[in-house]
Image (cartoon, rainbow, N blue to C red):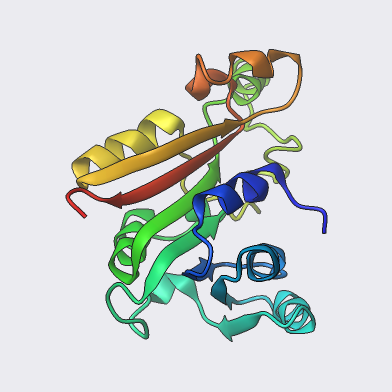
Length: 200
């Protein structure tokens, strides 16, 4: 199965024989891979009909659910890891979703596009318009991304919410990607965070 770079990294952060909940699981590729390679018992939440059909075809346990309405149907610490890839920035209240993820899971993993990336800054400075690129392929008026976030923004939120960062990875392509670990807020395209509650 072809897999995005961020999903490949996430696999290493999830323990074999554990329980995982994938929020906005898409076509179920990550959960199917974790099941087959690590014997992970996984469940996905998804709202897109085509994506749900793809999950079923992969024999992935999937529930149709709007994430903006919360996770009240799951009890505290009922999963080892709760995952959300490339969707946090599309939530109405990302900070509340993060709180719910850490209530339902012992740990959580989130990935999101870094809106502080140099290409986005350069495009805005040069053209005076919101950037449209492979990283951000939408116009300002039809984008699902309603909360623009950078590495620094997210880490400030974690400090305010007493969330412990277990791991952070930076994904980037191109010649300048060699600087991604030195200056992630400027050169990182995708942010990956592995989180838990402080003291957990």
